[in-house]
Image 1 (cartoon, one colour):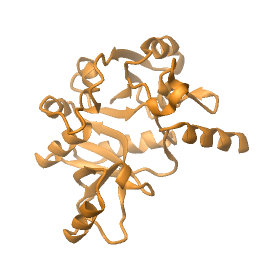
Image 2: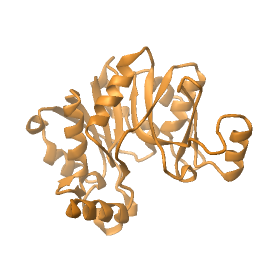
Image 3: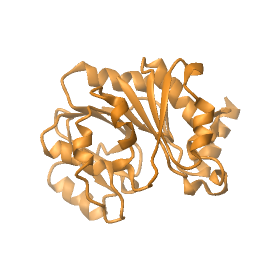
Length: 252
C-alpha cells in the first residue's frame, strides 16, 4: 500500500499564520503537522508516500526531501490549479500504478495507530475502499456519512440542512439520536477512484469535490467500508484549534 497526502492548500482561515507558510507546515507540539502524518504512515508500514504540494511548495519539498530521514520514499507533485479536492490526487496517478493507497488531507491529526487501523480495515475483507468517520462533530458543517446495516457507505451528504436531516430520519438512514457519522478525511482507495474523479462536474461552489466521486463509486456498487476513528481526531482548521492543541501540549 502507498499513501497520498493532500498538502496543496494555503489555509486562508489561518490568516497571517499562512502568509508565507503552507498550512500543513504549521507546528503542533514542536513539529509540522505534516511530519506527524508522515511518521504515523511509516509506523503503519506505509513507506511509499506522495505529497501533493501547491502554495509555497518548496517549503514542504525542502523539509522532507526524499524522505530518507523518516524511513520513507517521498515523491512530490504540484497541484498547479486549485480547483478542489476531487482532482487534487491526480498528480500522484502514475506514482500509484495499480497499488491501493491511503489518502489523507494534510491538516488532519490522529493517533498514529489510526493508520494501522485503516489499513487493517481495508485488508481485512474484500472491498474497494474505506471511508473513515468520527462522532461528535456538527455534521451541518461538514460531511454526513450514511451507512447500511453492514457499515457499507451509502452516500455522503455535505453540510446537510435541518430539512435534509429530518428527511434522512424519515427515510430510516438516521436515528433520532444518531449516531451521526462525520467524514473524517482519511480514506483508502484502489486506483479505480480516478475513473470517477475524471468524470466529475463542478459543484455549485465551482470546485471538483472528492465526496462527489466517492458518492459516484458507492452508487455504482463499489464496496466502500466505514471505519470509526478511535481516539483523537483533529481537523486543524483555524488558529483557535491550533492554539488549543498547543495549550494541551503545554499542560501534558
